[in-house]
Length: 175
Image (cartoon, rainbow, N blue to C red; front, side):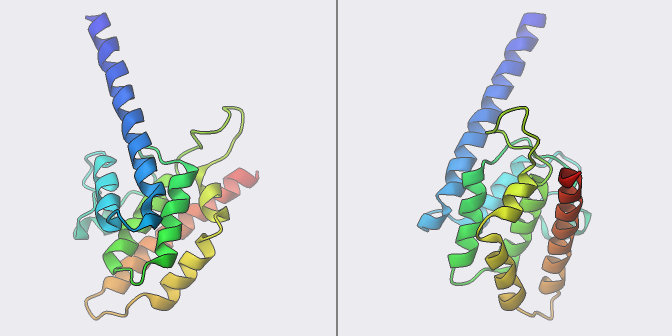
């Protein structure tokens, strides 16, 4: 029985590593314009949902748990691809903004997978120091549509949660 359990654990780890590699590649290739950003974000979030009901449907954003760590990691190139495409897309829907801020919030709970184990760096540092991050925030603040249906409030709630999470993570890294 123990041998079978070990094979299952190895198989699961292999699957997670494969998914991480595939998603990192897809996110990194976002600037090419051949990948649907909304579908990619929604799929990544769905596969990282831990079953607590904090998924990507419209009503769950208020209950979105920003403290969860995703099981499917993304690398530095993936974050750069995501932030780059947000700057270059002609329009970004409120739904994409919500999914983006949720994705970035989850990523702040991860350490770099592609760095030496002794290096204490969180993905939040990668997000904040990316060359496109300030342009993304500027674009969100200036271009986000005002809507009577509450979409902007919904997006702002997600962005606020991300900002608070980033501040806490950066304070922890600075100590």
